Image 1 (cartoon, rainbow, N blue to C red):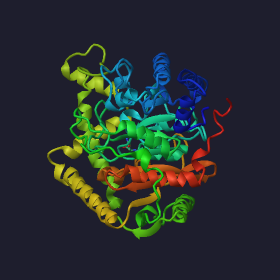
Image 2 (image 1 turned 90 degrees about the horizontal axis):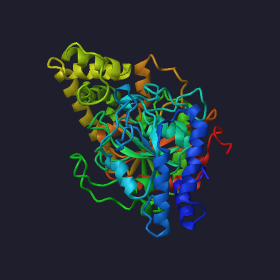
Image 3 (image 1 turned 30 degrees about the vertical axis):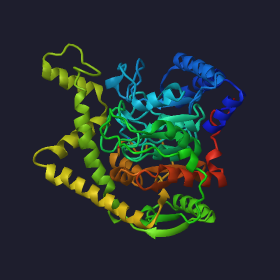
Image 4 (image 1 turned 120 degrees about the vertical axis):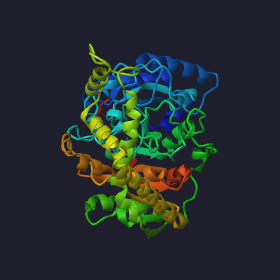
Amino acid sequence: MHNKTLTELKAGLAAGDFSSRELTEHFLARIQQHDGELNSFISVTAEQALAQADAADTALAAGNGGLLTGLPIAHKDIFCTEGVRTSCGSKMLDSFIAPYTATVVEKMAAEGAVMLGKTNMDEFAMGSSNETSYYGPVKNPWDLERVPGGSSGGAAACLGARLAPGATGTDTGGSIRQPAALNNITGLKPTYGRVSRWGMIAFASSLDQAGPMAQSAEDCALMLQAMAGHDQRDSTSLDEKVDDYLGALNNDISGLTIGIPEEFFPDTLDGAIADNSRAAIRELEKLGAKVVSVSLPSIKLSVPAYYVIAPAEASSNLSRFDGVRFGHRCDDPKDLEDLYKRSRSEGFGDEVKRRILVGAYALSAGYYDAYYRRAQQVRRLIRDDFARAFEKVDVLMGPTAPETAFKLGAKKDDPVSMYMADVFTIGVNLAGLPALSMPTGFINGLPTGTQVIGNYFREGQILNVAHKYQQATDWHKQAPAFGGDQ
Ligand code: GLN
């Protein structure tokens, strides 16, 4: 049952092959049996899940099912969930019980989704390895000595290990796509503004975007259909019609033009990573796509620009955690200053502190022009590069990550090498574009992914390309040996 996709499980529920309660109990049992080793969940909400499953079974029996009725979903612990701890991977919010539910979670619940629990993540979504979590690192189910990627590492690992059939993630600089690649699953970061950020704990507000993660593009389309839409409570959510993502999956892709940015295949890139992505592109050529070479000359500046803009926004967003209104408060403060200082010193981990310091520095009066303003100018150049490319092509493709899953601890003390894990994903966030990562083969038993980037609001087209590829190949169907014993 656990190797089935959401789409297959939905059909099974409709046919009465099993109930949502049976399905939910099956995944809860798998989590209980295997997550001790994987650490992909921070909270498991079994009781609530079973109540939702029973309600789903009643709705299905009455013929009142929605898009996701009865399907178990894991939510990243960055989404507020009323009455359930929402930690954001931080000691700061270890005891925070959200008083309301994020729009994404609410919309999926309204379509009948069953929440299994909240997944582990890098603290405040800062990281590429899930090692900055207060709750300890997540292990990669393909090799337990390796990282699952981050920051949505718990989401990707629980999907890879088949402890859940669908999960939500968030992507500020690659946090849906990079862990998707490292765990052999499919993940989509939508256009900025496509999915509401209301109730999603903010890291860098001009970059953060929630999206679906699952075994296939078809499943991501199903989830996005439920997640997307305008939300009056989020002023950055865009009032654009939601496309029929499921309906677009089988569109003919002959005549589609794929652009290959030369910057995504630098001479320094691991040859096996390049080969797997080139093979995926060739597969799409066989289906009738045309391939052209393009250039994104400013993309090389995306990592440095991001590491000014994202920390700057984070330093502002995280100022609300002051020991007074939210989260951790130190014991016996001497005075207000002591309260702020010790609450924040105790509540935040090293990487979060590093980002707050870098951000506050970049925004300070003497350095604003030198760093923040320049980074914003570079961001505009990157956006313009993409716009020029999309005058000639429909989608852009290249590797999602420059390497396969690395060993736990390998980059922990070298932040810059960690930051380079997102060298191919960050430009997309700076430009606000949609992009998907799909499984495209293995290197020494470890998964690799390829990215499909589309123009604004072309989620339907990206999902269509990935679905066609997944109809012709079976990389996305490979599951690790871990947890495959039930
Ligand atoms: N790894 C990047 C960072 O550390 C991106 C994280 C994300 O997308 N949330 O900021």
